[in-house]
Length: 307
Image 1 (cartoon, rainbow, N blue to C red):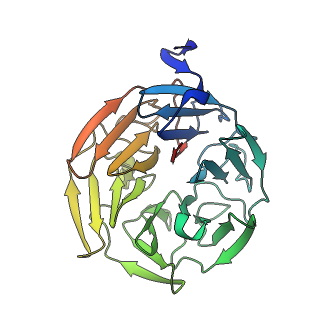
Image 2 (cartoon, one colour; image 1 turned 180 degrees about the vertical axis):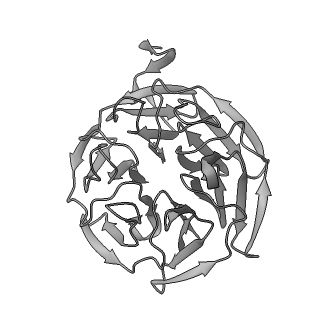
């Protein structure tokens, strides 16, 4: 049963959610940073509010492990932050974790679920960063990892096979098409074939052994609707069907073979902040538009969990 209507979005009680859930955290709505969190239940196509994060921020990184969500870094508009916090769905509350060693806005981050670690790379703090930090979920301690070969910000990251892949972003002040991958077994960085298009503020996810990069901004701040996919087996980039609209700065996550894009900027020009949710099935190559969030969000973080 619906509890309320918020900005035209029907909201329900999140405690009723079961199955696959998409969670969207923080972002910038045009006037101020957000601490609000919204969750979408895939089986019922409904949104619910979750407790707000401890800090208001955008351009953060987030990951999920079990029913827990980890949010790190970002910006409070004045400066990059080193904050790290964890939301436990069972406890239904946020708690602060030990901060990162380096405050960073626009990092990329993803959970390495097989090793129970959350990896955060790059970002910006007075300069583009190449440092990498790893949060050990069991010990709740931050560990150092080998630095990226290229300092970059506004990039995307994903775990594909045994690699932590970092794609695109701003390097040397310009959009990049480079892809650098940390081999999680050897802990050494490798350079993969470059993307076809230079992109920053793009969405990056992994579907099986495929790396998918969507949207972003290219040279001249031109907003992209194109998608390309890298197959780890043949080491080649392929073009996929375009997004429903040009888009950058959105949150992204994966459920099975589907990539979900949340929020961002959805026009060819700036300040067209979005509350839309779209899914793309990599297997069928079919797009679907799902019910929108209540809040428009630029540079939110999105994760998927299963209850």
